[in-house]
Image 1 (cartoon, rainbow, N blue to C red):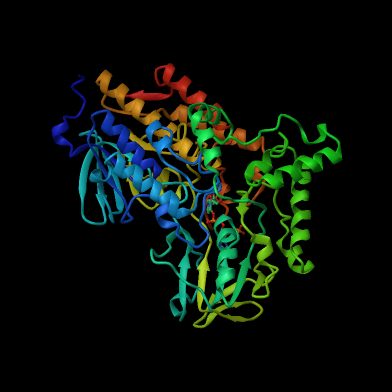
Image 2: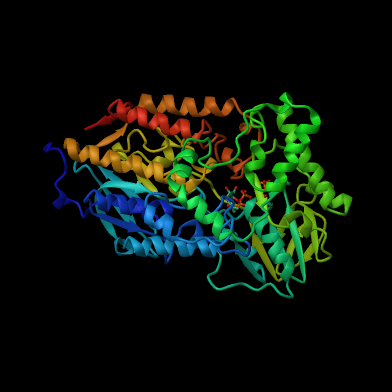
Length: 538
Ligand code: N01
């Protein structure tokens, strides 16, 4: 072994893993397989990450159950029985808890403990990690499994402390069920979370007022119980399905059309939109292969959805307010719903356009817009996240020379492959900025990243290498590539959280890698084959 490799005795463990969602748990599993010791830290009192925090009514994944699950253990994927086409939050959480128990992962995790700082000690070649519970742990490797949508964002609205009712954020929901029966409820935000929770709360509340800033495109889920025969047939070919999914743009087995929108005549085009609307889910946006790159193609797909919204919502004024017009379909995350638009046909649901009448403040009784006061018993913030970089930004991370990651990323995140950062040796991010992450089935993306990190650590072990980090030039080139690929699409047009546009002051940069999951995986494999091209070892 290289004598520059730190002595295990000087470190408390080989690796610290921050976060115990899908990513952190699988990382712990792989570290144990490598014979490495690890400490996991998790802010929640249990495992599950996103699915631990997002307990709001209606919370459900919009990737189908049979695909939104681990593939690394065939026994697990064969044994676990899903009950619905799209899994509800409680079922996913049960699944993750089962995986954690099954692989005995909890014993390495300290719960209710938030990592506050991670500092690289150049002399010792160790990371010193600190927590809000006073832990100080040193490790050779620091692995951030902190999630891309975990830093919940409540808008700066004056007066919240005066509010006499109760308020909630969808991304930090109480563990005990909340019953809105008989209440006057506000939901602020109409992204995926708002669109899921609105129909459920509408059925309970005396009155629900939805505060909408930007109308979003939503496709019906047509969720249903998962037929046992369908599940069994899928499981019989699980490995093949998984392999095919990994080779796609999003890690999901959608029907990716090879045809352009205008390669077919209008009636056939409309029939295709209709067929996909009838099947449900984000599969709709793959009806033709130019929807994300050609404005007229996008407009045609968007127009079909607009027509459906107008057909569902009976009040023409409300329908028009719900019709998205300011961004190409799919360039803000497409939503998948159950009865969303239909909720606005209920007598107890009303819509407020906050672009026309912005919310000025929270009052003791409710909300005040520029037009009037609204009394509420409860306010639900479905206002989203400081996405992709937020969770990292909330930790004081310092690399070589004491450089703060926050400073390095002031004008936007810079990574190599979305996994490592120049100047931050032995520091890994699972599904970090510049990787396909949020544009994919994130479980598939997580497994690929964790696999990359585990293989990299095995390489370091077998070659007696102490540190690895991205070369600045490789990082610059990757960032340029990520931007260049995004600029070939319609994504940068939208004011989306993909662009950081939902957080005041956040640099406007397209955060994920849109070059496709399959392509990205091939790039990672080539990098490894070329002896970790673009990485520097020490
Ligand atoms: O958050 P969002 P989300 N005043 O940022 C509005 C995943 N997810 O929690 O669009 C008024 O999408 C904001 O308006 P605007 C999925 O990847 C998946 O809903 O910024 N409104 C927007 O309408 C998703 O994309 C699932 O103009 C304000 C909403 O709040 C991601 O998580 C389920 C406001 C926020 O929407 C995030 O979804 C849930 C203000 N000051 C989430 N600030 C599934 O798998 C913000 N808004 C189904």
